[in-house]
Image 1: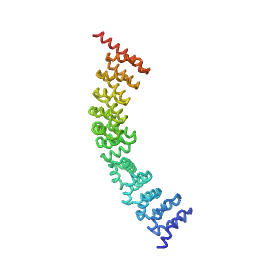
Image 2: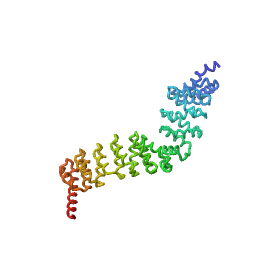
Image 3: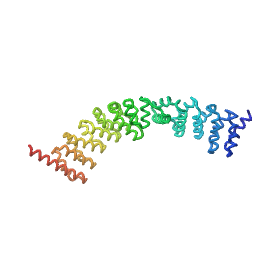
Image 4: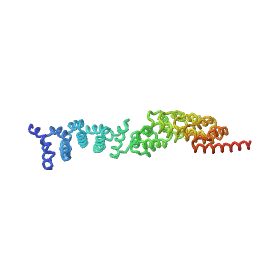
Length: 373
């Protein structure tokens, strides 16, 4: 026995030999020595020699379940290659303890280890499905995505429940999310905060397709701490013509994030909104919000907005001055003629042309009104 233990290191060195017969003889001898050889073999995985690595892996595989305790220690080794090979070897063993370890590494920050865990779980087969389904219900998005990928490789058929909705969403199966309806709303709302803009866009569109069951959740999401979620929810509410959301959307015109402001004003012009909301929006620091508000006031022909639109003719942005002038033309009130004429020498050529066009139009309208009086 003493001779066997003393022979371990020389035998491991022989696994680096270029001669296949020498490596094979060393491997058989190490297996004969038994479990005392496992820990030194795992430590020896830290080598750049691919021939030796393969020989060590094959030797460790021969130990079967007896290697599990030492492989678990190998997972804690400082060398990444030892961690990776230990996890890879564990995944080849059919043991409940191994499945627990693989599930733990499914969400490891080391992408290589996570990928090895995913591949190992696929090798474990359907025994891991219940644990993976539970992972779909966890708050960590990355964990859910990786669990769903493993389930897909296992050809899992989901039920029409929350886990099934998360699975469909993670697989970008938006049509199934629509079919699931109400049960898919919570994970879809959460996806409005996703880092990927394509996922956010698809989730918002899917919520629009689901319709009424999504309204309450979308309105709650307007209060989200995540700007992406607030903007996506505002867009969806606009597409749904959600009149009850008008007040909350108006509040977002003062949101610290300009994309949220723009999504909110875009939604407000889609729904029946009190025009005075747009009057207040003319004072926004966001140019797009100001322009959209001016356009909306002209579209609504909201005469009480006349003073605010006249003031907007002095906006520092030429685009805004142009939009305000056009809005005054849409409203059609001749009281705007004199304020417009004061700005006939606007420094911007486009604005000057618009002022000329609008004042001529208002003159004609005024003359028609006088003639029919």
